Image (tube, rainbow, N blue to C red; front, side):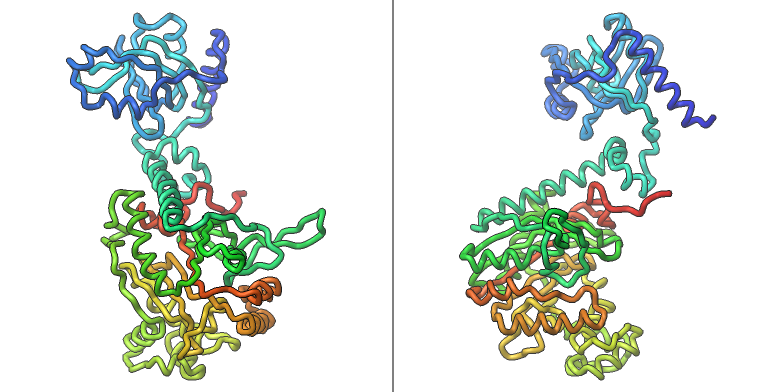
Length: 499
């Protein structure tokens, strides 16, 4: 029998003994007066004499993270997930049943404690226990406290265990909560209305992505899980809701990486009478404000890099960036004009070892070169703007350059954090773009956009000049918490099934 199996058996035996003592093994509730964190925050700075004078009393509870015995002196360490507090347990200070319960406790159990606060000879803030209440048994051993939970896959699969023994895990998700709250408050303060749009849609639209598919039995119709809320949010602008936003869950049936999870969270917003340059300015104002509310600063560490979220951000044309990077890599002058010509762009990509499919035009090839050569190097916040029309079916073309749209992506830490553009509001041009996407789909591009007749109909009722943006919540939290993987900032990331 393994040590793990012996521990499980011993813990089960201890629970049976507790029950034989007439103690409810899983009580319904416990009247807690203070959390461990509240006690630490209130009394941590008080001296021994101040505590002896005040004799502050409490009723608190938490998980046991340590049990130590030194003759008649016994100690527990309780945690509420944020803070830890020592408990002093003496047999002559407890009712007999309570001390019998103490002797049957295991590392990881939940208990309630009644007592007064004092300082030990080593000056540690401690509760002198007068009562002990059993709340729940931890039947499976937790990782040893001095090792913690270090196996990454176990942390993702058993997030409850990660949170129980790794305080840093809890901090990440507290930051995430503050990020979402800050975005909601800041957007509302700017006059944006928070809305909700369908998560099951008859057409997978609003982004170039492969969708998840489901079926509604009563209506006998196939539906898609939302890849983006974009087309529904712009319908609302058509209806006169000039500033709308949604903190939304999106689902994309694509690969998994340190930056991609099939289910992820974005904040997407639309503002009438604005263009993509207005949103650059707004983004430079929004992100540092969110950072200050979430972590108290807009100066962050991500990996080995010190990053500043303070404005202004660098600005870089996509074709300029791609041609400059290709020139450096090939030690030969590559011009923007080269990347606008399909054959010349394909030749450059071939020399760079970048795959080019038969249906790819010059715009898609130029974008592929940029992604391969430039993305990883964009550490400080950088707006990459003016994307090829070919890869932007929902964006407005530049008046003097129909092969280019008014679009930007914001890169921080080497990956995309936001995507925005001036919205295409010409229904005839939008139909032509959708038809071009259908041609791409017919040639095997499963991420190409489908035709959405109702959306075109909405545009025919008139969409005013509008700009829209999506901000990746998960990736923003990665940056603010210095987490290298998106799985670190999603409580329950999708993982391959174990045998």
